[in-house]
Length: 288
Ligand SMILES: [Fe+2]
Image 1 (cartoon, rainbow, N blue to C red):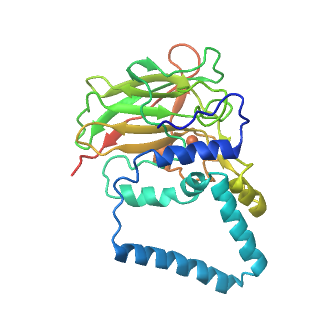
Image 2 (cartoon, helix red, strand yellow; image 1 turned 90 degrees about the vertical axis):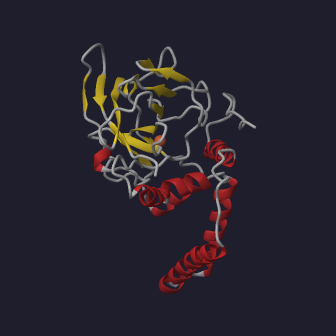
């Protein structure tokens, strides 16, 4: 079953966005392959519980603080923000572990706003956008190769990103379903050329439980502007990545801790037409 789309009449809210992300996760198939041995569950859950108890004892946590935590955890669930909370504050470490063996690109977190099966086009291509889409035109191009340097013909580049207001289609109201989302097929030389617009930096939703924590702690909610990507080719490991724009004030203090120096784009004036262009090559590891 496809998750209910967020309608134009529905107010933009953390709960609407969070519930859409929760539905997407439930239906993603990611739970189909989870196998957990009893010893592993006991060890991981035991360490997590011990870490929390150690904090309580060391920081002398009061009943008021304990009850505030309990209320907040309940609200995270009510707002559908478990995917957001986990993807913002934990996924980057899981991603580090998962890709540490790679000789090619290591990548970055997926985040909560990926939607599979975006419309497919052959490169060169223009991503789906509104006729009056705001934003600086961006030509994103490059080549997909294997770890020996051989081009990966017909590699698939899935691209999704926020609009100039910092909103994602299917998670914010009033945006066409596949706006600024697409799957692009590289040519025989593994080269791709995608026309889109430069996304804006955005704050994660501030009107739900995660925003409540951020305000209470005096943190900020900003993610630097970024492109989200999944790059794949038969016989090679799927690369999930984000690419960033130099000069963004939040490249150094991304709330999701998902920036890496090797993920920074080199932005140049467009060789043809308006806007800017950038070239970024991907290297995929073979599947063992
Ligand atoms: Fe994002």
